[in-house]
Length: 115
Figure (spheres, rainbow, N blue to C red):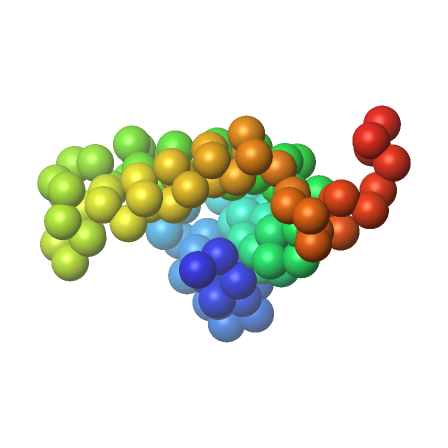
């Protein structure tokens, strides 16, 4: 879910993302759009590989909390009406990933524990 959203923000419609952020008073819109695009695109890849799992998950928790409670909450629950159902689901998933961390087959598992 994260990778295509990040790809779209970075490589397809960065200006549209900046305009949307401005419309909902998320400033500074341009650096925030770039940061979120990078986080979603590369963070999604890193999570799939199990690399920097908790570091990426905690940042995505922040992103998804804003998406859920600041952007989508006013639209009600159902995702088909622009509601918070889908981002809330991914927020809960990221919280679980943060607490669980990488599994046995993750890159994180092969890193020193101090990392």
